[in-house]
Amino acid sequence: MMLKQIIVQGLVKNYMNGKIQTPVLRGLDFSIEKGEFVSLVGPSGSGKTTLLYVLGGLEDYQEGSVLVFDKELKTYSNLEKAELRSKKIGFVFQFYNLIPNLTVYENILLSAVLGYQSSKEDILKILDIVGLSGYESYYPSQLSGGMQQRVAIARCLINEPEIIFADEPTGNLDYENGKKIMELFSHLNQSLGKTILMVTHNEETTTYASRMIHLLDGKVIRDERKLR
Image (tube, rainbow, N blue to C red; front, side):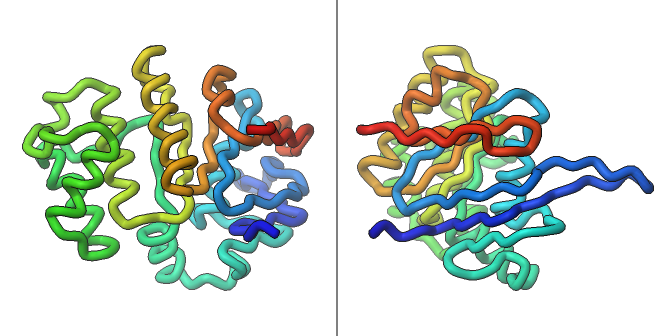
């Protein structure tokens, strides 16, 4: 029996604008097992990114239950949520969010300081994993978009998260660089055992996932597992 790292039951999320309530997530039920590579797919406005932020403790929800590592998310304190995101869950976004006046090494070191204390050897090892050995002294402006995204992934990996949340990680990249980033995610999943939950609108990227959860208007309309 596989370990379930995330269990979602009856999840409801609404946004309030004054007295106007807008439903975003409408009673979601699913679970994510350790080692899965899951793509969240659906049209713009279907609730994909909101769901990712809820699962990562970045946004609250009104109804239902979300268990993350066997603990109800609503019972986490703000400090516990911060520790969860710095040590057990890593985020990779469409925009790389690198600090421009810090080198590649320093960008990763900053995340290491906020999470676990990592050595120089740890950082160089992570750079090797993402294919950037020798680039530790470069600044973001000296790197291509694909290379900057690799730095962002290295920054995510430095604290050894069990789960990676990726929000449109290839959205800013051309086809070839996007393919290389997806191959890297596939390696992280299959070789390093990372659980990956990825938001995407690109059908091409879903081929790397072992499962696709289709959202429409805040509901799960299809949940497909692929044989690998």
